Length: 112
Length: 114
Image (cartoon, rainbow over all chains, first blue to last red; front, side, top):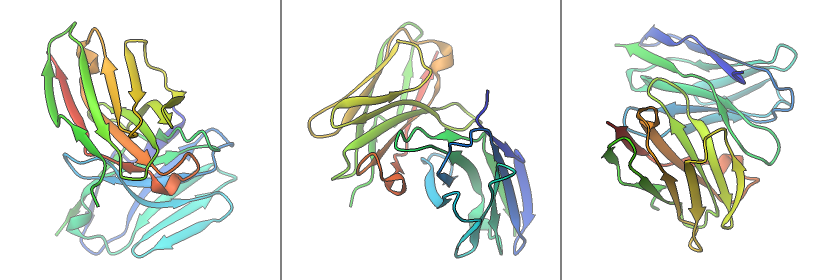
């Protein structure tokens, strides 16, 4: 059973637009929800993360919205730029065990 | 500061062979985790080590094994390679088990089994 489900699989956005990627999780024990950005040939890099005691976290152009009751969280990229073109992964983990469950990824293409 | 270093970057092996992948964590990081990323999918957890002890194991067969050395570097071994083992193998390090924010990935080793 997939613990974290991510959508859409791919996304095309015009420069300056808003990119939105959604994730849903099953396990209510998860208490840490990071988003990773991965460029071709590179490992994932932490972008932004949230814990379930807050509903939103913003860092620059990147915002996580978290809905605990719906068991969903999303990444919003404001003023999307061609340099944001990458694959984005949501993930979840619980407690101190620190095993990360990753979503299947969203390939974002920001058109100039 | 150097990031997480993995070697080799690319590797081609034949079915049935054995492979060893290496990881050097960021200086001061005591925890190392290994993930397998099949093309087009998200990373899947294989192992976690902290202070040379295994602290977690994912749903992988016993052909997969790992260890961590006193300098906190780590090796991942895969025996009796199958075509399905072809993937990007990622190593991630952090300062300690409680520090999620310090989770840094290397660029990975691309393993191709033919």
